Image 1 (cartoon, rainbow, N blue to C red):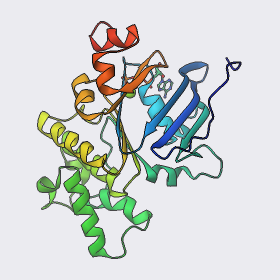
Image 2: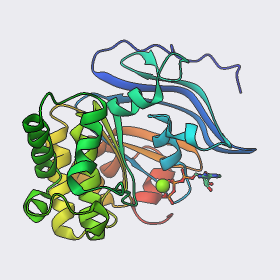
Image 3: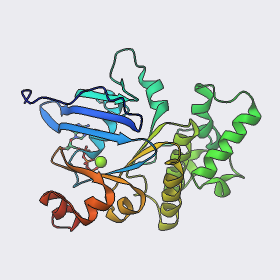
Length: 265
Ligand SMILES: Nc1ncnc2c1ncn2[C@@H]1O[C@H](COP(=O)(O)OP(=O)(O)OP(=O)(O)O)[C@@H](O)[C@H]1O
Ligand SMILES: [Mg+2]
């Protein structure tokens, strides 16, 4: 497994935001990710696609060390952000997660008000100097999450009192409130109706002007609509990675072709 020469771990090219080299992930004795090498471009939307259980969420969680919170999970290999190893012992995972934010499939608002859900990150990272600045961040974030109009008159009610789709948009607004450099989204639209889905896709498009976005999706249409790069995972392997147009129209690997044409799923 280790006798093939590996590419350089440190990647310095400026248009690459994050890189993985020789990434392996194990849950106990089960290997969920096998030797993944990938470069995530800056100011780009990258889609992760593949059948259920192929390791998309597992690999996504490697990118902001969320797997650290799963005791039986072990991550090997090198993952860098702007060329720096994010698993270096001197990296604080909390600071890392402010730069590499995450939106989960299941909305997980804090048991706090709508306002405080959004204000939480900016407060702990000292992003606002006054209440007025914090108010501005809260409004701007809720607007970006396509939720402002629905909640502007109830900001001090609990976030958990919102509908499922509204809670998801709250979580997206919370994630963008700290201005992350990379936003990881794990099936962010699976609880949303088509209108909110379109709003979130618009937001993703806007975010890529400034950030990298990595989105896991089971919707080929969504991947084709929002992403510029697509990675196809299968049984823990990154089978194919390239321009979204090429992956969907001219896949090089027969496994990719079978998946996108609906023969494996
Ligand atoms: N917390 C965990 N403990 C043990 N095994 C896990 C854990 N999370 C994931 N796995 C295993 O790792 C493999 C990859 O799972 P993962 O959740 O990454 O897949 P996925 O591609 O995101 O699937 P889906 O599309 O269904 O969300 C699966 O075999 C799964 O059972
Ligand atoms: Mg998943």
